[in-house]
Image 1 (spheres, rainbow, N blue to C red):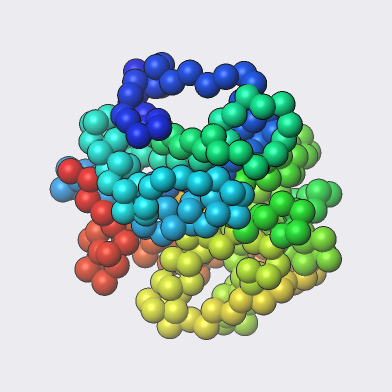
Image 2 (image 1 turned 90 degrees about the vertical axis):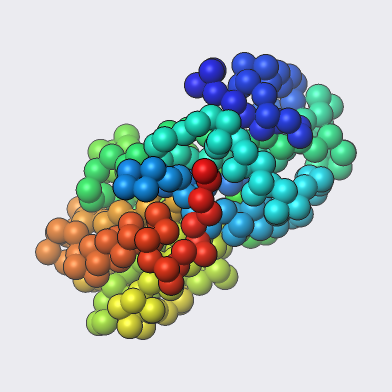
Length: 304
Ligand code: PMP
């Protein structure tokens, strides 16, 4: 995407103009944090809507705080720059937006104790990222990093090595994705997605204290299940066996959206087909991403 415009250090510039040193700490040690945001294109109204933009930048600034990356922008300013950037790129398609805040210094040691703090934002057209209607998954032999190792409840770039190892193992063994357990053996999340199961009329998802990232799509799904389907939603620890006996299971995430899980460790989830609850949630989710439902219009920021 070298002809694209990006935001870097207070300016919108051509992507090819950004030069980052090979010695940069973010590259050498993963000293950074990031966000993943979607803007949804609506053919009917010729409009692009950034989805829950504010919440993503609130989370980015929380991540920055945890990692001592001091970015001189407020949530409002970051939202404004993002809207400007989308307009500058003249996108007329659904887009994934990637802000990255990082330590830019060339200093050799992996310390966060310096003040070379940088931020960039780039965008990438993105349709159905999952690439499949349903996933076959396995439990990873890698455990999810816990909060006292790397603050996994932020989005630290370095933490994604853990995600990448779990995905690698899953793909090498012929699965579509992995599910990571916590250090104590409870279900945590996917490498880049939260997880839900449905059983006995309840939607169940692991609590923040089980080291999950508190996903913004997770929050949207919980809201929609409660408000639109009148469903009870419970945040509690989930055991591995419960996964196998769930009636339904699905992932939620900005890139992955709402993706049904139809098989876990070669055991069918329910009847091995995408479940009805998941299908309903997915349908309602896609109805709210382009500002059509007034009740959730505040989730959508028009770009043009
Ligand atoms: N967990 C992890 C580890 C993630 O990387 C993501 C993607 N940001 C999620 C969950 C889902 O979060 P969100 O819905 O905010 O994209």
